Image 1 (cartoon, rainbow, N blue to C red):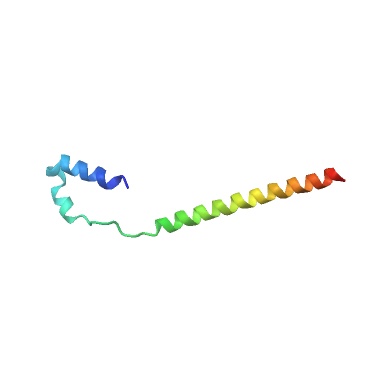
Image 2: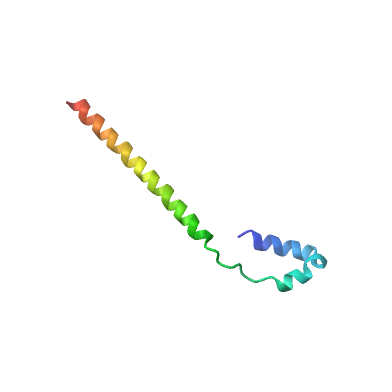
Length: 69
């Protein structure tokens, strides 16, 4: 998100250094699947967090049940 405006500004500041490279550069970056891996990692962390919360809730319920006996 920040890379395109930053690189555009650098190229405008130094056109003699980047003039030929800008003409050959692609307009968009190829899709490499990196976002998919990020989503899988996020889903795994979410699953671990939910499992931890459910375990904690179960322990609380068990302790309260034992205290009421």
